[in-house]
Image 1: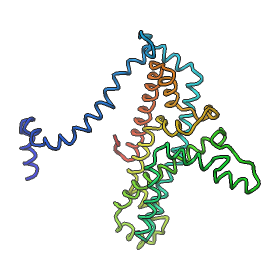
Image 2: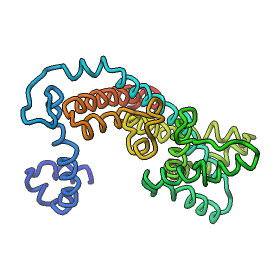
Image 3: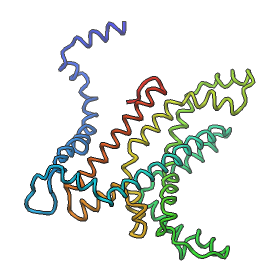
Image 4: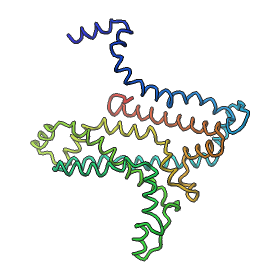
Length: 307
């Protein structure tokens, strides 16, 4: 009956089907307009990557000169290396944390304890990076920070963590984990609620232990969620910007300057818009390659592509 009804609906003229769903389409309109204005229309400016567009009266076509400058710039390659390293550290050290936290919370028997812990770890996600940066600056302050106060109490000398290249990357990764952990954990907790409890009961009857149930039931049941979250993390690995911008300084440029902050300095501060657009285009192409590659791998692991 439902199949016949769907077939009849498809045979109706397009405008009649649109008219019937006009309220739903009106609800979609604000989102469509936002994507059009801020996601698709800006792509028209990609052509400026082949010009000397900037703070000047005349704009001329210069072909691939901006890309030649990009590939021969030591500062660009330093920013590219820093971006890859910070992204790699974020994925390696951050990605397992929400999953582990979700598995631990899922083992709690008390409903109130579960909700309390979820609330506490999710709060930092609502803080902007400016707030997070301020928190870490105050915590690690060499004069008044509690971390250095503890070091001095042990007889050590205070350390200016935010200006020390040896510590700065660790601070970036730690602050990223602290802010994002709750968001990722909530997604995994939601996925864990879909696991059939009867599977656990059957495994317990067969003598399967706690770790065995986790390895053979829990993790395989949320495998698609794990791979999807990995894909989402890889999709913006080169888009690190606000976190670094509010926390770095000239003393740590060598280890902290990333592609997006490099684009910001060259385009907004120095006014070399054409060159900064070229760098942004290069970054977007690399990100696209990473996403497509990960999707190809996930299609083999999950036997179907995510995208």
